[in-house]
Length: 299
Picture (spheres, rainbow, N blue to C red):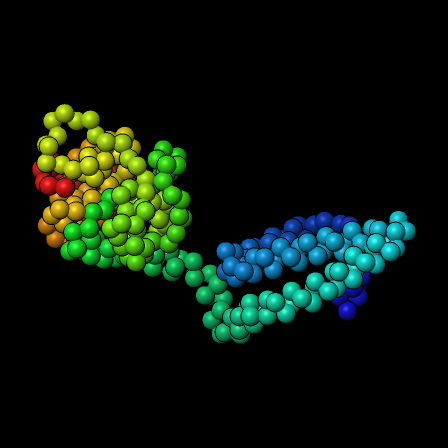
């Protein structure tokens, strides 16, 4: 059955006129956009991606088997055709849940609107969730006096993640709390966050060399200030001794007394808060709209 379908497709392609018009170009463009949307919606970063790759390999092997038959290598050609048939049927059985999910989505009345709006809504939810997850993490870390160092970095070309453990994981309160839990392998270093992803953990940061810095600052605070001096990064610190929460930017440190102010500043730092045209600033340059004073506190 599979071979008959492939043979029919090949014969149909052979009967097509090799002409090209603007109408053909528009049709091909429409199909390309449609396939791209379907790929992003149903296939990308899922087990179905392997299914698509399998189909492409099967098609290539089938064309190769036809070529072998043409040059009179019938035994190898027929053997490859039999393999194509067997694998094709196997893929349909293995990926039955994905096919059922796809057909179920097509059966929904509003599937077109979901197809075009799902990515936008997902991004919007992620922006809200990022700040929420961070604030929840800081609340538990501060209450339990668990030391933490988090780096918010938009440009990963100038970073120290190579000396840490690469994670590339979705940001969540549970993940942050697990990383900084005492006696775990990664709790001593810094966590690097880019967007809604935890890029790496256990990262070693450069310490500040400011001779005027108070001796009351611990290693985490010195690392946060040092990182903010050499890069356009914001570094959040939770003191292990006092539970105090601070953010270092451009070599200066701001201590927070409540989570409301922290949440507001995080929204500004990460670019999630809507601002007027007069107040808009580049990400991580929040010195322009937030007064940061160096206030000595214990680690």
